[in-house]
Image 1: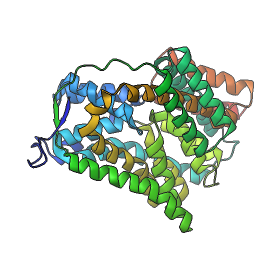
Image 2: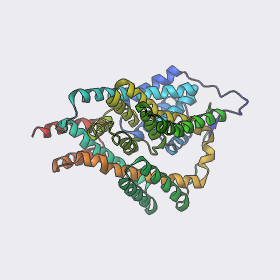
Image 3: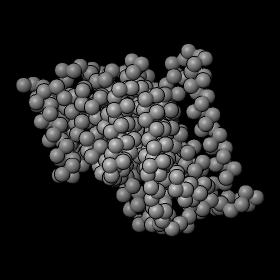
Image 4: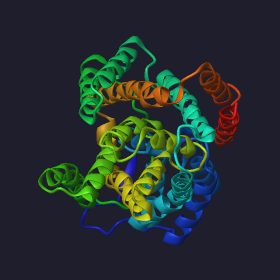
Length: 404
């Protein structure tokens, strides 16, 4: 099982690595891990399990299962947990910094470039980025639907979640879809079989875990309350991005509809800026949640980028620390598994709704747009081209079509 340190009266299990060691390894992964969350988990396995042997195959699989259950970016959370395993709580920070900073810095640079050039709808390269986002999200919907909606019941939950989200395009509509799907899953879906436990010792006490949960719920409940009492734009930004990081089940592309609601809805950014940045995010390595750095930079420069990046990833850190000591108890609960299956189906529905609005509606305006998006989808889905190559080609094709 995912074991924590021995009893509370004893000191936490001794770690074998250092902050700098974890940072160095994670930085190399952050510079080279293209392809999205599933690909990231493959890179992590090769590096941490096969090459460095920081943990065994069974412990790694158990860790992946834990982080797929938690809201937030699964690959980043796996990295944080391995950082904890290797170097304690400082190791989680090192793993996050190394894996996140390369793509975050690239996207901040892109935001400054877009701001300097402008986001005119007539910019062909920019339109190409918006079109390729259609292909990327369509591929994500296809792949997730096959895995998370393999039967009529879960497919129905996904479709219902998409309909509710399209008819009620707000954070409240998305949250209600997730909660309703979890309740329906608990009542209607059969639990999956729990595999036998693996052995890995994580230096996290139950006391530290409870403290992490206390901070998480204090911020989740307290930030909206403060926002209602005080009129402060920076507080609004922190609350919005922290809430997104706390509620995104499925990670990766699923962040799109929640962030679009929080950022475009109040007029902080335009749809053009939002979708162009999302397209650019596909061309950089590392976690898709670094899209938040682009959004923060587009709104408020370097300070905004640091604030939004920290706010959206902070829930992941707190949730990983809070969940590690209790995972075996949760994963053995059949009702909990059924609810999680329903939530995962709703996640597919949210992403399906996002494929239509804002991605499709802001990008596909002509047969040429549809043809370019279809070509991108084919290259990603069937030719298995790396996303960054498809993104670059789409930007070039968009610029060329824009001159016709």
